[in-house]
Image 1: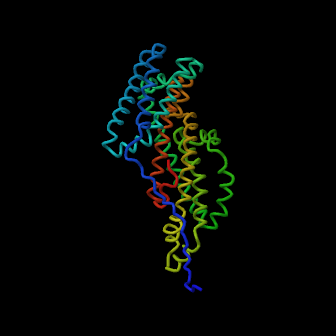
Image 2: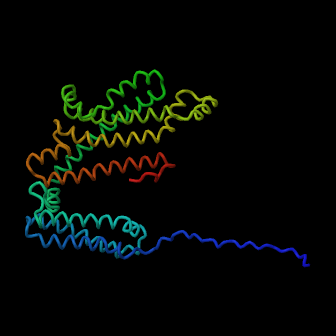
Image 3: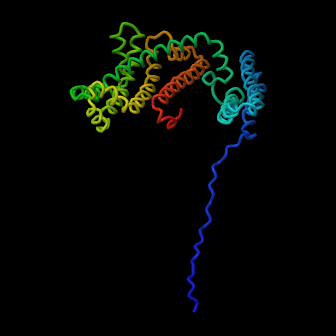
Length: 339
């Protein structure tokens, strides 16, 4: 009898090698051709429909589309030499190409087929020409809207931070402040327009006050919530090391509440945009909201759409700037929410 011990051999299952996807250094030809093809199509459709619109509109819009086409071809040719340009083309070229496609459909639906009634739905060439003709007035209106927005937003943020810290930290302020928030806060700031026009000395001050009121409520609520929910362990450690009340508030509670505070700042900024447009229609003689109302009164709907385009770029730029500030302050949350 063979007494040699048998050694069991255990076969290990083959492992699957997970390879991280390597991003190709070259840009796919579909992405490279997306924007040139879309802009060339938009330009071709526009030239075919040029006889149905004013010569000035046709010429200025042709220059715009021709510039987009030239830059897209140049960018596609040079993207192999510059990595930054290559990354930008990969990310934005499909979106810009889709925008050119939408402009083409817009022009076909309005100028080509007249599916949408005039003058309520002008073509993109008419909107672009309105922006060129009224560029001085649009710039002045944008500047005044910026002053009103920054003034009201700064007022609301300062007042909201002060009241939010007081309500979140001091029991006495919470007892008397929360009923005021519950009563005044839910009321839209635009509902106070009749009272603001009577109380304030002029329309500019009333507009700034209304914007500040719209910003004050969300900033106060989120700041108070962040301060009151500060971890007790942070405060206990600071007290053990001999921290004063001022140190606990400004060096422990407020930094811990910064994520909540920035949520309130974003909510207040969105509310300020709405209040700005409405407040500019009640006595202010300049601003984007006033410009829209004025153009609508004269049935210049090309100018109305032009102002809406400027509003989109204006508000998006301010929102982007606030996101940049948040990314600098809340470094550990950078990239969680992108704009």
